[in-house]
Length: 607
Image 1 (cartoon, one colour):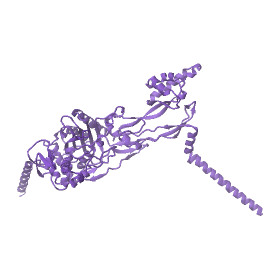
Image 2: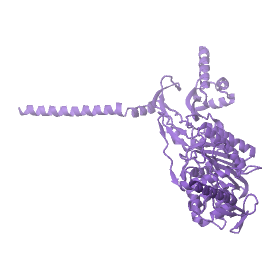
Image 3: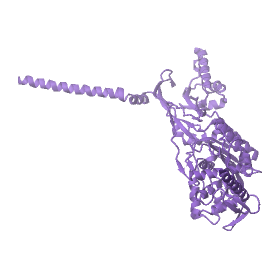
């Protein structure tokens, strides 16, 4: 009986071991055939079959409405296995006319012993179809005696080429892609890792060195890159591009920039530069044209910088819009003499009047009401010497020296907009801060992204910082309206039916080649409607020949672009009347007399 129990126990142990063995075998089988099937399949393909990459399409770059600025289009790389070419001269003579190449070019590419040689990169699919069909027809027509005259060894690789449907319209912003498919400049470069897709891979069997039709087996699918939707509106961009190109051509300027910005969101609706280039054909384009001048080129802003000095003095309670100052033509500070653009006797101007006529000496006097540290701090808060946060490649912070490096002439120079440098994007952001009730919002050209499945993700809200109070910003806006009046420096920027606020700038231009000042930077930046600003438009023209004043050059460009934007975005006139500000001491006295008379009359009526 004991032996039977022992035998039964051994059998049970054996059964347990067998069950454990089968369980382990089943688990390993599941692991190989289910969990790690793709890994083993890829390993087998690499060891037993030939593999090739499946190129992935780059994501598109579109405008705010989905209109493509950059897109990937299917193309074919035509390659050969040189070891399969039996008669290189005959094959070259056959293929050259179809490929649009010389016989010598084709023969050079197909002659040799390389298993892989590029013949035609990024050919249109139709060209490959024509070549392939012609080879098939040629080979099929050969008799058995001429079987060795077959044309063999030509193969096609799937590929993509980058196409820019809008041509040069937005090229300085979008950039272009190199021949190897990597972004070279602009957003194509800075967002390359996001826009680039992930290549797939497929295996195939070879027969006589050729890829056997029907043997292809996808190992890993290609994944399209992320599509980037910009805040740019193509229609607004087109108007801005035409306007700045015309202005640059007529003034024989070196370059020009127009930026249209929504001050509340930071969205850039247009970003136009001139001259520019065609990203579809970059072979002969200079490096300088490939730059993005709106964020890479710096300049001294001139009188557009005066609004920061006035805003700081208003915020600190040093002035009101109707504070009267004695304004001479010239003034001596730190051993240098500063003067206004046109000679004049001593004037008694309000601060609004100083802004309207863009007086340098008057602005110097206002700046002197602030300490150097205070003036520097306010300009820094407005974004001087600080990156805008736009995220655009190559963005410069501009140049702004610390107060410890200031000389006796720095403060007066800084007060009226020279002695520091900005980019066009920084200058636009300064005015957007005033338009947005004193809150600076970082600009952006990115509205959001769409992944390979088409799912759209809105870009994160922009960072913001309060610079001056809403009251100060509103006062500055009212003062800026005088600039486009008949008394101001830019009546050409006025738009019938709308309240417009802006500021001209005419600054001496620093030339790095000679280390001296030569030429001018003309600019006009403004917004509308002035009492409830919707959009900011900045115009910057570098080194114009002949007339160089910001009002006469930049004002008409501003008017053309802003008029279109207001109409395109259906912004109606606000209907509010302009509250006149006194520009001179005489006008201020007249205003005071009218107000006194009106008060007295109202008092009599109330009795």
